[in-house]
Length: 184
Image (cartoon, rainbow, N blue to C red; front, top):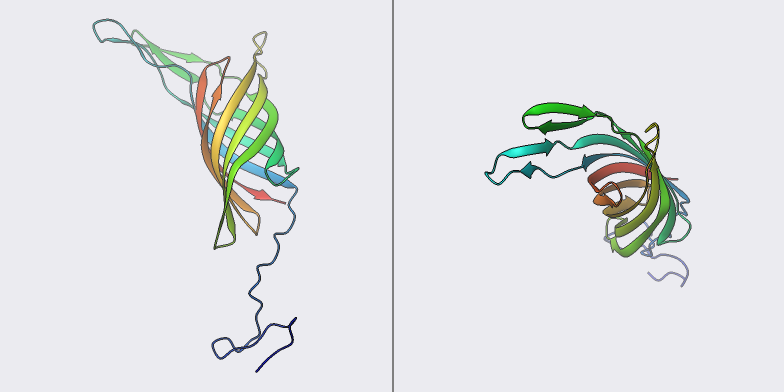
């Protein structure tokens, strides 16, 4: 049985006519993500005998980000980072707690590579460059540039997830990040 050139053809394996061409992705303009980060402030400091003089534990934060998806590979990004606990440090065995201020950042995100997968998803490697400022640090507000890298996955329904790392230059903070979101 032959069909017209424009119509899909029914076959014995598939009695319902189907079109093998992939539908175009719906346009998405905004991505909102909720995630977490583990911020590592300092390395352990040891004396020449090997005794650890100072040790800092990572601080857990909640990360909320929004992206305006301007182009297929480039977006404008805003990020809010809210610490969930103080910074815990031990100095010569004595515990010390320090306030960690929230931070607000803005900048750009660029997809270095994009790989389409058969399951209607897109896998991307993304580079992120932001300029941020700490908030409510009472006389110690710090403006800092940061750079990040993340692996990002999103599907045609709008679901997104990511994992990566970032570095804040003035405060020398390394963060491991992960989260989920949705594209609208």
